[in-house]
Length: 209
Image (cartoon, rainbow, N blue to C red; front, top):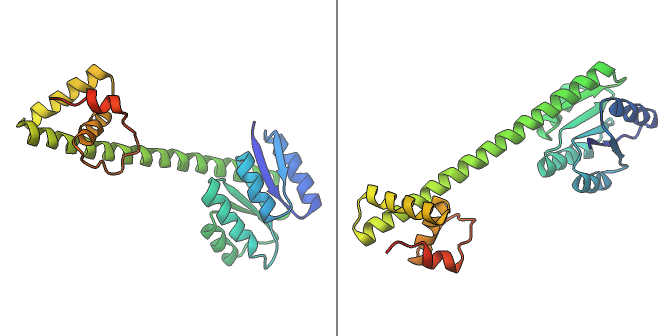
């Protein structure tokens, strides 16, 4: 179910936004009255988008926007009486995706929603790719460290150590990283940045003799 969260002081604008967002396919629209309620509701419901009204000289909205973006990566659309350079710059600094001015036009709101949500999806995908790359790099470090330990301990060549690790990993149906961690832990060598646990069975079973 698509969700949107709103913090709009103008009752007429709030009613209009609710109607327009429902037409855009948002089934649940949560209206909040202040920053505290907004952040609490965002944490509980994890909406797809936030639409916030900014009034002149309102500095709190930028702090709230920054918290929404940093904590939940929710795309944020600001609605303002006017948008000058200072407002735009502060919006960029606080993670705002788009700024719309009153009166809201249907096509502008639609464009802002489509573009903001698409940008958020791209960012999430990029974060996933970065996390996967980091995991791959860390896994390679652990495997290389374990391979070096086998070469040193058992007098193996690099190719022999790697083949032994491959064979044991396949026999035990575990990943090369899990096997490498077991080798290092069994020899009392610290495994840096490891997030996976190796149980006692792995420590005694997967270690090549």
